[in-house]
Image (tube, rainbow, N blue to C red; front, side, top):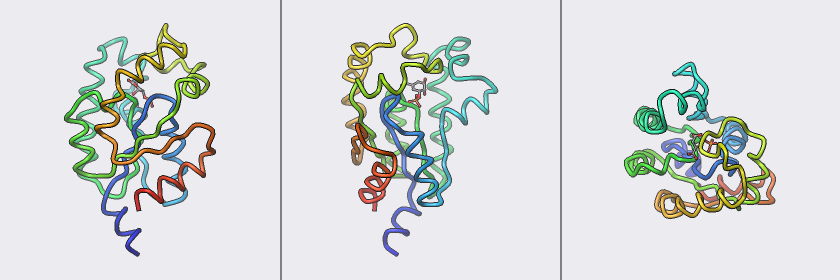
Length: 175
Ligand code: S3P
């Protein structure tokens, strides 16, 4: 009972670099826990009636970051939701504050090589446009490392693990 209460009264925020497995884990957790899932990127694209790449192209990155912050403020009012965040959500310090106020922040970590394998064919990662290689990914991960670490209440490494194993580890650690 403690476990259910614990997690139903809080949200779970999945953070981590692009390709760390946030969306897959969120959908697996939805099945395992019967939780509502919010995919921030998908919801922003739906609300703006535009793909994320198009939002970046037309309005610029900081406009997109404003949308992320606004959405997080709305999510803060909810309970028992699993949130798959965009990889850059930790860039704004206030976002970290909003996530921590309403939930447990779970960092999904993956090596640059794993990330590259998972995202190399993606056309929907504007931040990696023209830089789709392991070196650039490693550099950007390094730039963001302190922000991810500051935000994370706990970390789950996703390299070489299947999605069920990852989700069981998340559930065990947040309970
Ligand atoms: C971004 C990650 C993307 C998306 C946007 C920016 C980033 O989300 O929010 O393209 O800055 O790392 P995913 O991590 O789901 O790919």
